Length: 322
Image (cartoon, rainbow, N blue to C red; front, side):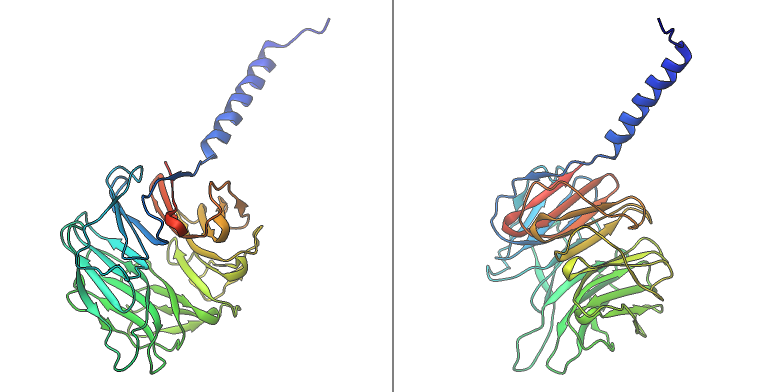
């Protein structure tokens, strides 16, 4: 008969319990919720853990007051059904913006009513699409999009909550898909043919950074002034640890296009894309793991707020995790 050592048993049991808890703590389950629409959703934003909005095709503007468990359509009488919204951003529960084809919409009533705040004027031609929107603080925001008939890429800037949007000159000459600012001075923009633009003086001057990529880049996110990530077509993920002076490719298990990326800090982040793809990393992207997804619909946008997260995509897809 082999005698058991009580001390060893206690250590083994404690280790098993610890490992089980650690594994459970790292597992985040994404659940699909009913959005009440079949419209393709392209943008999602929460101002806190409860109050959020999602936007997309057919003039759809959805809002949630319970952390994304339930969604309701907003009263958008001033918005035509053929409007295509690409992004939404709120800086307070009342003040928010939508962007779409050539227009910026604003609400000061939490979405009860919306009005056109700015419109791109292009003589004799269709207005370029505004494809992304990012506010640095309550009053300063940036929007980027397509090229105008003169071949100039669209970068818009406001310093007074949209009272005035100014078009900013830049050297891109390409469709721009994504924008992110760490603070009022330092920001990045990405777009077609591997374009990455960087400013360190609040948009007065822009410089091209070498992405070593030729495909479209759809989204960009920085955890701080140094650590940043970009996603693009064919599963491309780029990473910088020096503010964009150098960009390196990160390996991941898929080759499908990735449409958005977001990080909680310099280690933990998420990327989403085609066919319900969800990628997760806890080591800054050195390792990307494919996460279980409840949908095969294309996913377009992800938003993180503390321990809550939301994803939106085609055919009214909304995923949430808490």
